[in-house]
Amino acid sequence: MKNDKERLGSGPGDGEEILKHQFFAKINVADLLAKKIKAEYVPSIGDKYSVAAFDPAITEEDPASDPIPDSKLELIKKFDKEFVDFNN
Image 1 (spheres, rainbow, N blue to C red):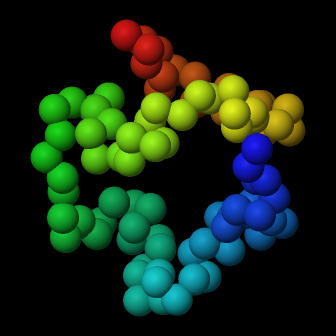
Image 2: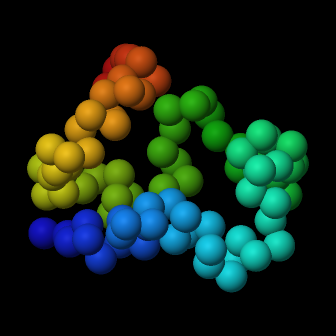
């Protein structure tokens, strides 16, 4: 089983830990979040539900092998509307 406490951004700093990584040093995060920065590369996909660009090792993984802790479920529920018909 994966240990989510070892994942980048899972500590007390949350996503800030990721944004402080040197990869993001030259990126204006406010502009990024406001979608003012144009992507240098936009992959061609069939539709918004396509997983073609993801490693099959991830997309074919049994979700039960990586359970979601109860502490994160409330946050996830806020985005339920984004996943209506996700399994169809």
